[in-house]
Length: 119
Length: 478
Image (cartoon, rainbow over the protein chains, first blue to last red):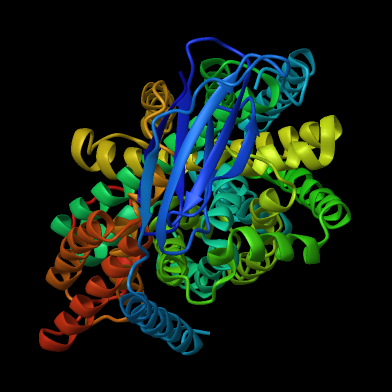
């Protein structure tokens, strides 16, 4: 039986999924369901993990299944894992962006202005 | 995956050939590095071409090739641009390098500057920050060496990591900064030629319009101008880059090594050469969704996509590119950290009466010691590359203002500098843990800046610049 595991943080819109199977080789199919919608295929292949980024806020469910080869049947689906993406508040992010702009401007202006007198 | 992009035999041959070339050059150039000045600061008369080349080669690290695509994959266009802002550190260090050389014509390390300028308490805090950062940078590169050689050629992690570390230790040990700068010159040409080939291949194989359309459909947040984490990451990364360059002895040792009048031009030109590199590398991260490539681990997106686009020839190109990036940065860090430990710990604490000849020998032993410690820490892959490196962000961010104010303001006092580094680091680490890695350096720098400016205004000192030009060989100056 394939399994899925997920690691945060989920406030930046990305998740790392990892799954495994007792037997080596074969291929996996990963599906996702966004905000309770229908499942859609996200990946098919031999990899035992996926890094998924660029997700907007919302609830996403993932499930995985495995088969030994093209002519063999798929296993049953793994336990569903749910990830809730919740980005940082935009106001907070803009405040830090502004702070960064001020700090950098002052730093650069200080070095440039003091260096001019130094030449 | 069971197959690799490069045949292991080809990879071993390349690895062997480069290893022999670098170590041989290290031994040859080591003949010039018999004195302490030769070994630590390459005779203090390095010219523009070698100077610019060593700066650009050192700053193009394995992290540039791995983290830039990772940031683009995680945070989209903002992430790619955020990484390229690290070139601002080279631009702003250009005038600082000239001032450092003028103020400390006989200097060896950034630690000496802090000790002479602010006294021993601030010096101890600075050394803690600098050695921690240097070790995380070194470990991230050692791990990258093992991970990449395993991914590209199937060479087991432990072998790849051990060989690259061993080769860099050997030629740095024999040749000192002469060997580092000489090999950097050759490596910079190989790296830049590889980057140009990579850029052309990316443009040919992945039309920008197609990449944009796929991302807009499948990963819309990566194109969002108001992507919260990416907005925070932009200035965080910029300030992290400034902190890395402003404080670290890798860059100070070059400021001391470059001939008079060379530093300003060499650092500025290196910044211009470096600026497009993360954009080219970062585009690999954005191309992954368009090419329908599954990425199992975010820090491997660059190599995976490059090998997919370029095939075996491209994978070999990437192998050479990464090998040179790694070697040019590890050797620089080994040499500069060895100088810092030898001059600031061995000479100041353990052997104050050591002669220059003895210090030259100790420096060699320190290179070996740093190599062994790095190897031991790399033995277990402890975290993803970004987590390892960005943990040092708050610490180096907090050193920016003590450095620049110390260089240009004689009124900045030692207590302010010490508090700025301690409280800046603490608040930055708090932000790192509570908000995310993309806020640590920003918060650390901001707090440190306020403390330095406030302390200078409240309790102005009156530092005599001539003390920096005086005895930097061993006299205590608390």
